[in-house]
Amino acid sequence: MSAIQSEDFKVKNIIDLSTKNTTLLIDQDEKQLEKQLKKVRKTLGKLQDTIYAHDKYSVLICLQGMDTSGKDSLIREVFKDFNARGVEVTSFKVPTDLERSHDYLWRHYIALPQRGRFGVHNRTHYENVLVTRVHPEYILGENLPNIQSVKDVNDAFWDARFEQIKNFEKHLIENGTIIYKFFMHLSKDEQKRRLLRRLNKQEKNWKFSAGDLKERKLWDQYQTFYQDAINRTSTEKAPWYIIPADNKPAARLAVASILLETLQQYTDIKEPELDDKTKANLTEYKRQLENE
Image (cartoon, rainbow, N blue to C red; front, side, top):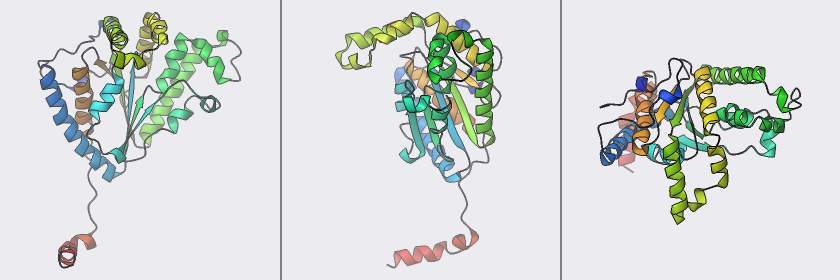
């Protein structure tokens, strides 16, 4: 692959994750990838300023992937040139007691970006149809009126929840939110290498949790449910993008390039013009300042 095109990553039809590459085949070495990323993110940062000034769209970036798929480092590198006032990162962990006392979408809704801002969600509302499908007993903690036991968490329950998520995204889009959903597609072998690195490097030990190994044993289930979630919810206006994640620099460049390419297609996003009175008096305002 000589150039990154968003259409090459977008999910437009039913996909089989097992047939999707986890390594991006691109004709650049690591230094070239990093140089290209710097160029793309600088342009993306300028576009973010325009979106901030335009103040009519918000941008929601959803990052999903298995543990060690590179979400944290991607956020650090891709959004490095953004103005801090225009972007907010939210990392969703295990729901708190307060969050569980509301419906499952509440904590995601209150973290949505304002108009003119970017919101990056590290793990997203899709955790509620991924982790909870692998561990349906977690649904009992939501204290739902019609769920008395795990037996009640059936196909009809998941069908309804997927429909709720699609309606949630439809509502956001119709009210000016541009949604990106990136699945960081990591291979099981690469995850093993990264987990071992956490164990072998003392400065990385803090990232390791024994729970990572427990979840790794459920790899196949997670892949099945990721595939199902992607196939059910990739829509024209809120598509999923499958990003090969084994090569971190290439994955970062892919995400940044997709954001830049697709956001530039919004030709209505422009910096607001000054009103006629202000424009007519610019020379006078300059004169006043220069003569202070």
